[in-house]
Length: 540
Image (cartoon, rainbow, N blue to C red; front, side, top):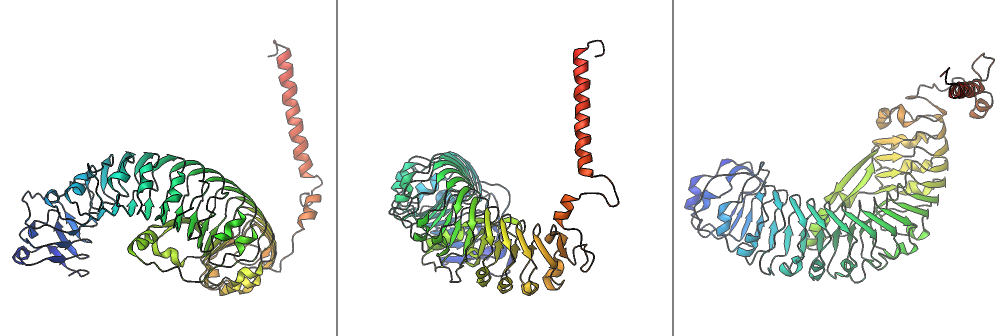
């Protein structure tokens, strides 16, 4: 009876369905007691899904007659509460999802110990705290453990690999874990997904991570890792998603990902990396996302990077890159199909930061598969914008701001039919703004401010009617709404003439010379007075 509009409490007559084995009430508006007391007499019940309802705490100490294999109480509940007491009597559980229940206390290692066949355990977004307690003995059947968004502290137990050797998916993000990554994690041969992001882990990223043969998804972002990248990150691995952003990583990229030809996403943004983008970058022939922003990279973009025809998102902003921007290609191919459940889990967990519409946003989940963008802002690029960029008809975001680009805005930009954010501000662009840009009906953010553009602003039609003066400001020869300068009015003196004849209208004095001489005289008088007072104590 899932996905309906059922409401109210569970009726007592449910207790009469003594042959019931499977009950799915998920995604309704029901009020379900955490103790599941209305179901206690259902001795054959093996499967219960009450997720997406209101789970409330009640006081019930009786032991249920059922032994569940599947339990999901993933809810939108509020407040903190203790683990339901009936769980202490369950010994056959294989799947448990208690996400968002606000459970308090320590990690329930007893739940793993009592249910030796437990395969999946979700405890995300609860209020669990204290250390992460391991089961006393090795538990070989637990394949998925998700404890993200809690308040765990201390170190990740050094024996985690020995106690949970069957792990295939481990989510531990958004907690307070500190210290280093325990070596025993590298001994979990089946581990495919490892997410330790947004903790306080520190030290160097261990080189053995790249040797985990099954690892496909790795997220160590938002920690305090420092030092250099491992020399060979993916020597014998199947790594496809690597997120290392917002750490303190140093040194060059060097050969770190030279053998990681399976990579689909690489995020090294917000670190202290130096050197140039390596020329072997094209070995990552399957790469879809490349995020290197907010580092200290320098030099020109290697020609090999321009040849990577699978890229859908590239962010090189806030570096010291230089040279010309060449023509670019953005892939329009669909994102690679996910094949198994853990692939799906990893892709749904992946996220990245990207600036669009002048705001830095975090993108997560399936939307990433449809996102395309280029951000080369805040570098030292020179030369003209390649008109071929106008062929990227599927691109959503293009940011070339804060560089030293010259020449005109390519008229081919009118072909960017899907673009939502176009920022060309703070460059040295000249010429007119192509009038056909008004055909970009998806455009929500537009800026050509702080350039040398001239002529008339685009017609105030469609979305261009919403763009304000700030989108065009500091272009001395640009006129038309929404700028205050009316086209056809007298042209002001050129900047060159103004600089050589900087006099007030009708005045007889060069004001620049006046201000300089006045300032010098003022300082000299102060120095003389100070000297006299220093020499003569009586006057002082």
